[in-house]
Length: 281
Length: 281
Image (cartoon, rainbow over all chains, first blue to last red; front, side, top):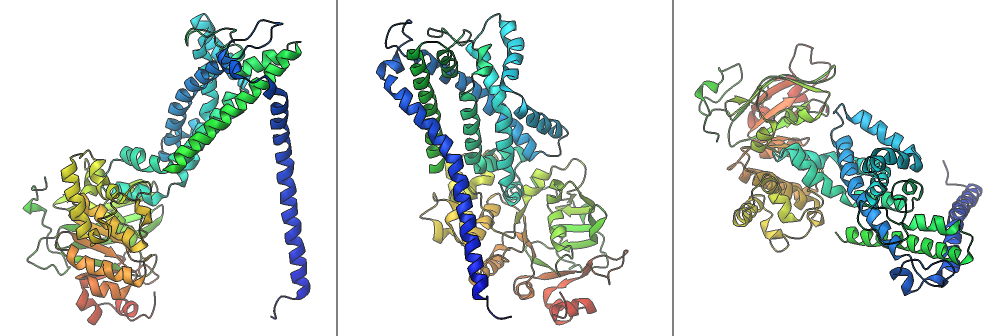
């Protein structure tokens, strides 16, 4: 009929402002704890971080100094093994689920990966203990990496599945209409178009497992010294944080905070670097 | 590789007005396509002469695109779609047992409604994709085919200085000509086009229409179009499809198939005349 009345317009403006305020408040509520954690880690941990912290083994109780070099290397090693397993199996299954929906194996794979997301990490650790540690006769970096890799898989499957669904069907049809076999279209046309999203999903999974301590307790086990190979027990940052923070010494509590800071920084740096590499393309 | 065109493949002259001289490159015989209980293409028989442009016209939902997609087995990808009847191409039924759909699509290319260049590839790689991914790696050979295909698609002069830049940077009309070049690069005998100009502005449309006249020296073209003027301008023969209440369950939805001039001047069916003169559709 006539234009919008002044009263209506006023009400709409108020509602608009109210919703914007609500959203801003919600964001704040989410961000505050995040920054509190960061602030706590920095304020309590930064004083213990020096060059030796990155290059030396822990000092004996009662002595100042020492570092967690063995745990940094151990964590990198564990996450490396986990990534190989998680990416190969996870991306592979994700491709199967997204690109070959008519395959009868797809429904069980999708169900299992949804179930796996809900399995507590410590249970995965127990399974690997039974399957790998007992069979090998000792704790090892390999067992720890396998445990973390198993935890990664469902996240990677989901991410790959979702991102591949976003690639327009017309791109697949264009490839097939060139007389290319289905697998070539998937591997060389569809997958490259989705690789950025898959990388993001993989990173989330890496960040998730890099901080896991529970599944490592009875797989990688921990080690006060340099690991002597992937078939030997190894230290890891989450394990160091765990054992330092339950110890009765204030000095060790500071080391736990410092280790946490390093762990968070490592994840942050990896994430940013990978983002940068994939955004460039 | 295609020398085995047997003379026996020549169909008996049916009721259709075959030009006695040329042997058809493609012939649909009693072709039916249904999605579940919905019969979208009914008993369509139609022969396409080599080095001609054949236009498929008709209102939305008349089955013309469905028919087109049956000609290079694109329906293989749609689980619900069922194809019955024969499509004889170069003397061989492409739906016969043991025929590889990948091989069929290499000889019968397709250009789609919306330009769909491969998003992660350069202009060069888009055109070379069909060859590269099929294993042809010789640089000189690729260079030559890429240039020839782009020239045939009337795009070479516009892109020759930026072959390495991403294909997504081209305008819509250029992208569509790139898609035509990409199809031509694998050397098809027949090119199916599904409303190739419906997403383009009038100028880009005109360029593609001009292109069709030149292209038919190299390939045979079957084009679906919503634009009657376009059918009139570019095609040698026109097929009119209709699927409404006037089409009984026993009838074909190919209402009329004739020389374009004849159909536009003197249509044989009252419904064709009604459509062409704009009384429905």
